[in-house]
Structure formats: C-alpha cells, structure tokens
Length: 462
Ligand code: UD1
Ligand code: CA
Image 1 (tube, rainbow, N blue to C red):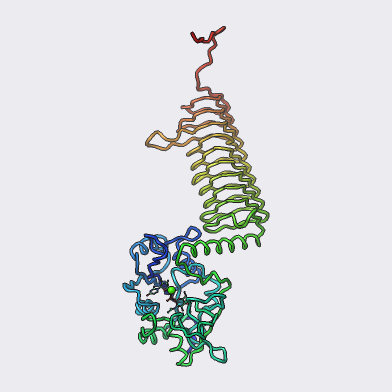
Image 2: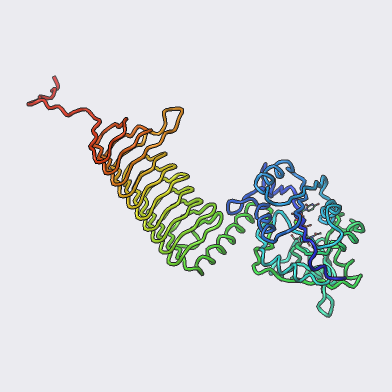
C-alpha cells in the first residue's frame, strides 16, 4: 500500500448508540463534560486537526443531536449520515462509505469517547504509513474490550472481541481503543465484505484488520499519552470519572504554568483558562467559557468566573460572580459582587460587597464600594459612588444611560434617574433622587429639607 501523504483527511465519528445506561432523555453524545457536549469535545479536536470533512453517523435522538451541533459548530464542515439500525461498528462506517473519497485517509472516532487529544490523533495519522494505524493500550482490566492479537514478530494480526475470544485470547491485556486512521482505499475495499458471522451477529469494523494483514498491510499501533483519552462514557459514573480526569489534567497544566490551587480537587474549569505566574486560586472556584488571568491574581473561595479577562494583581474576594467582564490591573472586587456582561473595570478601580454592575464602565481608580446597582453607566476616573447608589436605568420599557464624569462624588443612597449626566467633580448629596443633569463642580441636592420640632414628646401607652 502506498502512503497517501498530502491527500485529504476525513473524520468519521460514530455516534449512533443510544446510551441506555445513562438513564436520560438526552442522547448520550449531548451529555456534557466540563460544560461541553461529548460530541463537541470530539469536534473541537477535529477542528484543530484541520480536517476536510467530518462525517457524523447518528441514530438515536438524531434530530436533537443535529440541531444542537449544527448551531454550535457551523464553522465545521459536517456531513450527517443516519444509521437507522445499529448493526455494529463496521456497519456504521459502511453507511458513511459513499461520503468518503476513494483516496486520502479517515480517522475513525467515537462520539462518546470525548477526550482523545489533538497530539495523539496527529501521531496516529503520522503512524499510518502502510494503510492503517490504531490506538491501543495495555491495561490492568481488559474485560469487555477487543484484544489485540500479535504474531511472534510482534506484528498485529487481528482484533478479537471479548465475546468471541477463547481463554488464551482473554488473557491478552493489550486492548483496542476503537480509534483508527485508515486509508480510504482500504475502507472501500473491505467494508462491503464484512460479515456478521460472530458471537454478537454484528458487523465488526475490527475485522478489517485481518483483511488488511492478509493483503500484506502492516498495521501500526501507538499508545495515547493518557489512558483517559480512549475511555468512553456509558454511564454517569464513567462520565463523572472522566470529568475528574480532565479537571486533573487542566489543573496540572496550570500548575506547571505557575498557578497555585489551594486544593487541586476543588476547582472546576469548564472551558479554557490561561493564567500568568503566581496566581492563587482558593477552593470551590468555577471557571466557565474562556477566561484569562494576568500575573499575581488572587482569587478567594467560591468565585464563579465566566468569559472574563482579569488583569495583573487583581484581588477577587469570596463569592463573586463575574460574567463577560473585562477587569484591568490592580482591581479589588467583592466579597459578593455580581459583575454582569459587558462590564469593564479600569485599572485600580474597586467594587465592593453586594454591588451589581451591568453593561457599564468604571474608570481608573473609581470606587463603588457598597450595596449598589450600576447599569448602563459610564463612570469616569477617580469617582466615588457612595453606598447604596442606584442607577435607575429602566422605565419599564427603555434602558437609559447614566454618565458620571471624572472625580464626581455621589453621596450614599442616591438614585440617579437615567438618562442623566453628573458633571466632572460634581457632588450629589446623600439620599438624593437626581432627575436632571448636574453641572461640573456643582453640588446637587434632591431630597426633602430636614425639619426639626423642639421638645417632641413620644406617645406613651395608656
Ligand atoms: C468496539 C470495538 C472493540 C473496542 C471497543 C472500544 C468493534 C467490533 N469492537 O467495541 O474492539 O475495544 O469498541 O470501546 O468495533 N456505534 C454506532 N453504530 C453501531 C455500533 C456502534 O454508531 O451500529 C457506535 C457507538 O455509539 C459507540 C461506538 O460506536 O460510540 C462503539 O460502540 P460500542 O458498542 O461501545 O463498541 P463495541 O462494539 O462494544
Ligand atoms: Ca460496547
């Protein structure tokens, strides 16, 4: 067989299984690991490999799988092929055969084996020099899996399934992951010839190995870097244990990059996290989406951080929720702050406890320290927003803007009724309801004047 070097790369993802043991109304491949569907993990890895076509063989819950995935992966060339009856892995690839070019190579992956890595697949692809390569692993408990039979020279001869294996074959500890890179020419040649004459009366994809060997093809085998890469999900326990394996790997990579976790088992990264040096992450912190942390960021317990960029030397006190927010350097946040999407906190600003900020910019060095709601607002530099300040941004229909210019001082418990502008260096007296713009350098008071009645006698009980 000749090496099909610069030709096309297709991926066939087998995803027709029902996943009965998940006990779920959701198709198995839509179950999530680290916040992303199992199939999504496989697709993201394919995307990194720059594949020409991704063929998904679907069956159970097909429409739900298609809609969900087509929405999220519009950037990938996906071809959907239905396998109405699950007659075995060989049958599953066979139903996709007329979508595969006659030349080039195909990676065969499983939709419920989510964590195979880009590096492993790249090695698998380069190992395919004679027509077929496969991922295998020697394991402590091979029960249930296909066993790799090798001849006296150590060359792979065949794969034998658990249910078809004799006593000697069952002692083999090298197992078939089910992940292969195969020349399309071999698939076109062998798949139509598969039979289901075996213990399970299934069309076994694994039977192409002995056909290829009979034709003089040498089957290359490589091992994955991590065992979890070839583990599948059949039940909730396996899903949870793969989740942990993945979390452990993410945490280990970040530790190598200089992040300190108070307890590496009590953090969750559901997405991507990149971090500078000397970052500290306390227990029960959850990262979601794509998060970026600068150097010396200090994150206390219980923070939930989603799609956020946090600059150098920021301090997040306990129990902050931060969503789609951009934070400059040296910013203190929390405890108990709620930063909602499209919030920007400039360098050295401060957001204190029980403060909610939405779609607003807080300028350099400005402070919102206690019990406030700031929405649809632009706050300049050096401003002080007193405790309990509320931007009244919503009249029941429209959202309006509040502008607070540089060095303004908003007294505690004020309501700023938007649209409204507080000028540079202006002061708002505590307890004001501000409905008109305040000029620069002015003092605005919008509250009842205090009255005093001398020698007041409180009522007494009769
Ligand atoms: C298969 C391999 C076995 C290997 C094991 C690794 C065969 C015959 N055996 O076992 O050597 O050790 O994987 O997990 O290939 N699927 C379909 N349509 C079908 C059948 C399966 O889409 O008709 C999909 C399933 O959804 C699953 C994958 O293929 O994602 C593997 O199927 P599964 O039944 O788990 O594998 P086995 O055949 O038991
Ligand atoms: Ca199985």
